[in-house]
Length: 113
Length: 113
Length: 113
Length: 113
Image 1 (cartoon, rainbow over the protein chains, first blue to last red):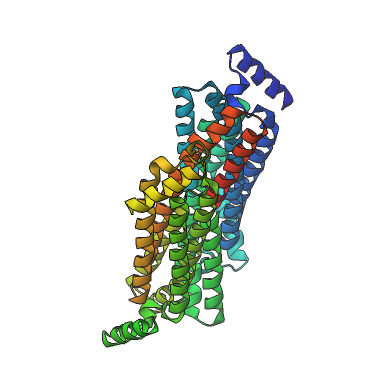
Image 2: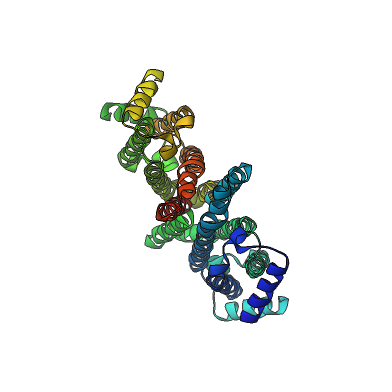
């Protein structure tokens, strides 16, 4: 897993991307851990359906997976505001406005989903 | 996959479960297909994070996965109301009230998640 | 307020409506109390905006009002399942299926809003 | 109504508040118009309950009011990011981090409500 992370980072740097532009690399391992846990929850749901488990128990597990996805999104969004958006705002100009607009639209999608 | 479905159904019948009690078996394949697609979305999210894709694109994918989980839950819930809850209501008595209460609590968890 | 409630109930009975068809009259006062509190929250929001209160405090109040609306909806929905839907299911036939379908669509709107 | 708005603005300026600190005054009239419409929806809900209107119609109106509250919150939040948070980020220091953190927490409350 670490090897992959290093490789990817190498590719990133080669492509000239800076982490100021992305910002979530510091918490990358935490993000991946959360997502693997969510994948496990979704696989658990498949097992529950296959084994005809009780509908309400399936729905409880869906609520847990949905909350976990939201928690991941909120953590991602906080980093995005603290890094990408803050970076653009420091630079100023139309790019700053565009980043704020873009973040607001992403928040709207999260609130509505 | 089909084999598993048949085996499970066999086990179900052997155990004396009736589908009136569960209700979602008729749409089992559809449910499993949805869940496998959601699993694919969550694995896609892991790939996106590993490859440092842009935060906003990750968040858009999270919204899609969340909506897909909700659609699965709503489909599950509709079947539960049409089968398990309706069955209990036809029987009447305290079990009917308990089923309605239980379904309402599951709906509350979905609305709040 | 009480006078109005009595009058309306009179009109209802005159029109031959049964509460089995509606179901929420037993909790009518509770519902109206909740809604008046929500109206108060929304008026409070207007005051906050008029007085230029801090955005985050306004947003906190919006979250409270949204949660209160959801709680009202969930209480309404539980009664609807316990009375209108259960009543239709007891009668059976296509009306029962239609009621379950209709309730599921209302739940979907709540989950998505 | 206009008179009040002018008075309040006068009071604001007298108190030495700057709009950089708040940010939503430019859209104040739009916000108040939205909120008055939401208040009307909530009063409409009270009328519907008083007149024993059909549960599903009441729930549809609740979904509309909830969506309207969310739209107000998202509009408020976008202004907050574009003004208060951007302003703090330009100044830099711990205040900038605190504003981003605070905004993220408000977003989390919206997503979860």
